[in-house]
Structures are given as structure tokens and as C-alpha cells.
Length: 394
Ligand SMILES: Nc1ncnc2c1ncn2[C@@H]1O[C@H](COP(=O)(O)OP(=O)(O)OP(=O)(O)O)[C@@H](O)[C@H]1O
Ligand SMILES: [Mg+2]
Image (cartoon, rainbow, N blue to C red; front, side, top):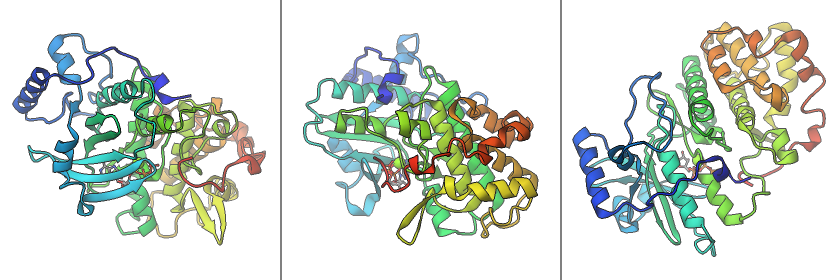
């Protein structure tokens, strides 16, 4: 199933006219905000439903900015390597500077022959950008605008300055070994995902939650990247929605088996991120030449930890002192997300509440009943069915 099917289709003028752009720019300049939708300041007021706004001016303000290829080439000094931040499965990411001085990240999607000619592809790309550019939350990377001109497909989003969670976990610096930073990352990402699942109408399923897509600011506040869009582009590239998408090590078993994709697939992936935060290991570790899936590797250690309250073998040895109660909560969140079958997995809002100590862990994991999911191996009774030898982004 293509993610686009999850979004509202709204017939709109895809490319703002010059008048619209002027009006929009004027509104942006007057507010001092480069973005087109208001940026909320408080957590409670952050969520802004990505629905079509009712009145004319508001509607104009919600349109993402449209850039020409030349404008974005200028912003990145002709896509020079000096401005290259990274390369992912869909293309390159550049740091750019817009004429008003705003620093942005520009994702230049790989050209795939025939993609531009596909019927509806252009409209679909622009519709998706319109939808996701209306999503605003402090823990989600803000989408600012795009360029879509046949083969050239780029999108412009907020620049997040402090690399990804994966980068920090691999390098094991002091800041990532600080427990409160790990907790901040877990909680902030859970809040961002809760907003996609429960604050947006219709629900947005991320489909590629992983530590590379959790970007950090200098205070280690997380922002989830790549929601909604990147895998759409892969849909255009393959034109088959039967292909697995997402990243191995993070894919929910029911998605691998039946291609069934729900918000609970994201919950599973989030649980794997929690396992990374707890253990310091990667979602797929290589022992020699054999890739080991973290969800499988951690299983006996999780059982032992929950049975004996001895976390030594499970917890990242690089982690400086940690709060045992908070660690216990994070562990229960991880086991509930990863080892429960799809229908019993918690909602992301419940994970937020457990991490915030607002509800007890028994709301997501009833020890006597749910320990069977660890001991009987469900949903991992057939570990061989798990994809553990695959490269990223299928
Ligand atoms: N908004 C952003 N601000 C700062 N850096 C970014 C931003 N978006 C992506 N990056 C960086 O660019 C690099 C490539 O990102 P990209 O999303 O293309 O690939 P990925 O997430 O590693 O894999 P995938 O293609 O599967 O999503 C990453 O290392 C990421 O840290
Ligand atoms: Mg990414």
C-alpha cells in the first residue's frame, strides 16, 4: 500500500501563482517567520491538524513554498560537495542558505528514468508535500517547501544541526552516554510519533522510524525526519506497492509477512529504537559476517533483566549512571512495542505517558499475562522468518 493512500486528496492549485507567492512572502515577512503555518510554542498547542484551512488567507499561508531548481542550486552553491550533509537511499542531502539567511536542508531525490512521466506522479508528489508541510510539532522536522519540475524533485526542510541518533550511538560520545539525553530522545521522539498517529487527521504512518531518521539539535532534543515523503518517492520509483519499504531491523513481523502496514508498524520500529537506546547496539549488528537482529539478540537479556532485576548484561556499558526506575520504564516500553503482537501493541500516547511516569507500566505490560510474549517467543516464534540479512531500504 502506498503511503499516499493515507492522506487526503485535495484538489488545489499546486504551484502558487506569482501573486500568491508575493502574498505568502509578505505574510511570512510580517510575522518574521519563514514558515507558512504558525509554529506553536507550547507542547499542548503544537499540534495543528493538517486539514484544509477554511478561509482564503489561511489557505494561502498553508501552501508550502515553491522553489525553482535555480533558487535551490544557488542556496547550495551549485550543490557543491562542501554543502553535502549526507547521502541516503533516496538521494543526497545538502545544507543550503536561502536569500533571507535561513539555513535549510535540501534533499535532492535521485533521478529514476521514467519516474517523471508516470501518470499522476507529479501531482502526487506535490500533494504529499502540501500535506506534510502543514504538520508542525517541535519533535518533527519542519517541511518548508519543494521544487518539482519533471525529473528534478527536491524538498526543503528545517536544518537540524546535530546529526542523527545513529551517528551519536555509533560514536559513543559523552553526550549520548548521558542518561538524561537518552531519555529526552526517547520521550521527544515518542511525542513526535504520537502526533503523527493521533494528532493528525488522517493518521500519518511514518513507515521508516529508525535512529538515522531521528535528528538532534544541540541540546539533544530529537526531531523525526522523513515522515510521509521519502517512501512515496520510492513508490514512484518501483511503481509497485508490494515491495517492502522501510529499513531492516526495524520492520514489524506482520509487515514483512503480510505487507500489513498500520500505525502499529511504527510502534514496533520505535521499540527497536528504544532497544538501541538501552543497549547502545545497532538495529542490525554484524558479528563477523553474520547480521544479528537486535530484537532477537536482546530477547534473552530482556527476560533475564525482567526476571532478576539485574540489568548489567542488557544495558549499554558506556552509559553513565542511570535512573533505575526510568530505565525499567524504558525497558517495559521496548518489550511492549517489539514483542507484543500487532493488535496488543501499545499506542504511542501510552508510551509517552509511561515514559513520563503518568501511568504505570502495567497499562502496557501485564507481567503475568504478557510475559508469554517473551517466553513463547511470539511474535518471534519463527525467528527465521525475520529479515535479518537485508540491506537498508528495500
Ligand atoms: N533536515 C536535516 N537536517 C540536517 N541533516 C539532515 C536532515 N535530513 C537529513 N539529514 C542528514 O542527511 C543524511 C542523509 O539523510 P537521508 O534521509 O537521505 O538518509 P537516511 O535517513 O540515512 O536513509 P533513508 O534514505 O533510508 O531515509 C543523514 O545522515 C542525515 O543525518
Ligand atoms: Mg532520513
